[in-house]
Image 1 (cartoon, rainbow, N blue to C red):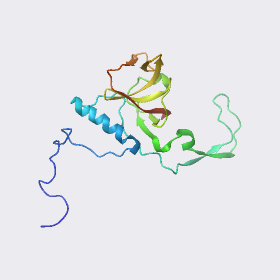
Image 2: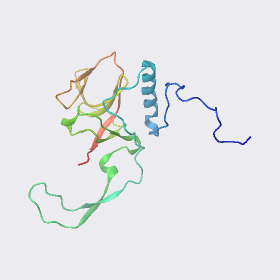
Image 3: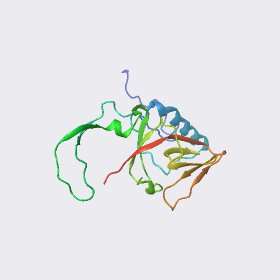
Image 4: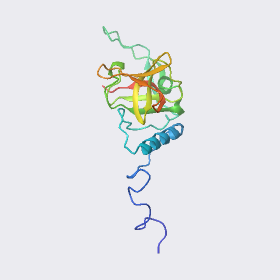
Length: 194
């Protein structure tokens, strides 16, 4: 008998594990591993699949330490009347300087839904999320409420916390003591394709 490789009948049959369905290996930042595990445990304990407004297409690897540098031209572009063009490069633009303060705690998610259109966040946009920032009143944040992930604006009114959508078709959600609630990170940038 040969060694190694796949053997017929070996291993756990598909769908018989903890979640009762096939699973998939996913790479995610080490800083989020415990939080993601807790979310999965809550979903498993509830005995239902997650229903989320914000579909997480991908949790990015922490941003690479060698970020691309792009030329930054001396002249600003006119959004009104055209101005004479120059071709002088003023500096090189480092994306880390503009997208995140904490590359090792930053991840990206793709938006599914229109509850934040008023904040300039559209379906299919990429959100740059910094998990190291302390959430503050007025921040747009990625939060988990009762096992469901969403993007909303945080609003404290006294000691009451609300998740505020930026679309009049959606209602604010007050976070009450009976709810499971966690902020995964603060949205620092929106990447929107034209």
